[in-house]
Length: 286
Image (cartoon, rainbow, N blue to C red; front, side):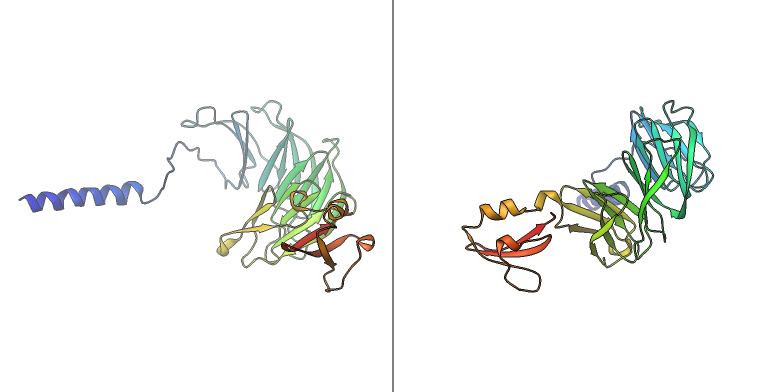
């Protein structure tokens, strides 16, 4: 009888573990709101969740009580809402056929104030005022001046080699998840003449991108999460002045071809220096 009791207890514990914890680990479900469309993107600010809901456009959800989220407003955008970004009181929607700009100063009554049709399929958007950066499918990266939200105007673009799905802006660089062409890094210090300064052909299909400090995180389809480091990021960049401070310790400086370069001949580019502590990689942007 005692053995049966032990087996019974073990069975109960197995049952509880399997069915109570099998679908989660250290995460507890809080609440949900079933939008009418296909929820693809979200931005949360001041107790409101702004949801890009596919062919149901924008849905505004009050999440002040996370256990009971409630829709308080919506706007049926003309396209297919894929992504959203909030800046000030304006919401920017990557709407497949273009960029929709909505006034959400009253979240319960969002209203469209302008629409810019992009040449491709707008899947992702990031706003670093006064510019909106749009991942525009086969049309690559589009840079739109939104200093006057009622009159958006394209000021520059860069045709990435793949299919631009997502975009993130950090300092003077735009990071693009470019489908089967992986991660592309675009210098947008001059928005009218963006230039590619780095890329990595990721092993999967790049769908999403996020940057934190000097690390770039890529949602890479079947290859899962990939993490990269762009050497041009300010947090890991050395300048000519900093090289001079190391000059007493530097034995030689080489360019990418392996040729020794004198300190006074250094131009924009990537170099390697040899010191007593080993080899150091240097990137000069100016």
